Amino acid sequence: MSRDILVSFEGVVKSFGNFIAVQKLDFEIKKGEFLAIMGSSGCGKTTTLRMLAGLEAPTKGVIRLSGKPINDLPTWSRDTPMVWQSLALFPFLNVIENVEFALKMRGVGKAERRRRAEQWLDRMQITEFADRNISQLSGGQRQRVALARSLVVEPEILLLDEPLSALDAALKVRMQSVLKNLQRETGITFVYVTHSQSEAFSMADRVVIMSRGKIEQIGTPQEIYRTPRTRFVADFLGSSNLFSGQVRSGTSGFELDTPMGPLRLAAPAASGESATLTVLDTQTHLSTTAPAGNVNFVPVKVIGEEFVGATATVYLETAQGQEIRVQKGHDELAGLPLAIGQPLYAWWNPEDGHLVRES
Image 1: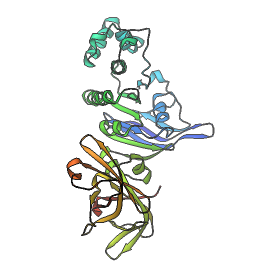
Image 2: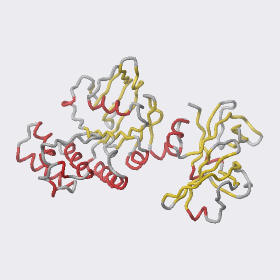
Image 3: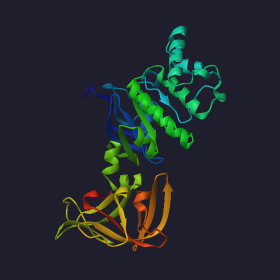
Image 4: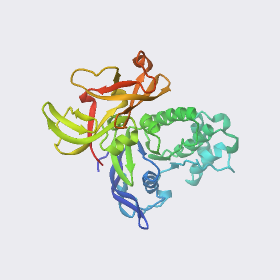
């Protein structure tokens, strides 16, 4: 195993009776990286995290930490602390006593654990709350206490199970910044489970997308966003327009034969293969007339518009009933007639399309 690899899953399967929760996981986690595991409910992401924490035992396969198998290692011997969705703070202890707890369990002397706890309270900017009861804290303050309690032991890896799910939208954004900065400053490996694309993509160095107990794709947020490996990934992210059809070799190159007509492909593909063309909604354009040149275009009509800050999303529909989205800045949409029912053309450059096999 490379010295850069901290954790490896080797053929890991987890079953509960006849139900297979995780199907043959093979992937590695690098030292010092922020890895996010995401997917919808029931995809196996939390089960994967629990196996790494020692809360579940793999049915098959091996999990290695620093090259050593840990399947049979008890939770308390793994040095893999977890920040729970519920935070699991002790209500009978005040803030600094919560932070000291793990050090106390490890036999660290009173003076030393107090010193280290105070350092982390200061680092998390909650020193003023040291003597408060947990019930007197806000959601964000409790989150910082939970992080300080896990990080005070200076682990090599920290596991986080949807820790921001209970926070309001504005606080989530602030805590995302706190988490990413902490990870960069400490160099501790973070493994973060979430169903939120915005959380995973804003913080993680790499993202694992899971579905039905298996890994669909692993890559940087940019790689996954721009070049989804399967139709499931493209559909799950929801940031692309999808056009399904059959690849054929045309007079001007390869095309995808779809219900809306042939769409040009920028790269060669296997003729006769069923595939899906994905085009980011930010790279899909609108015009009032059919565009000329080597571009793909589809006649559409406007069915809605949504404003989000500096951008707007225009919802459109083809004659075949397929929805298409276009996301642009307000200045780019200025001058376009966007009344409901307005006929327009959605178009894109062939090189902005990405072809994936059906899955």
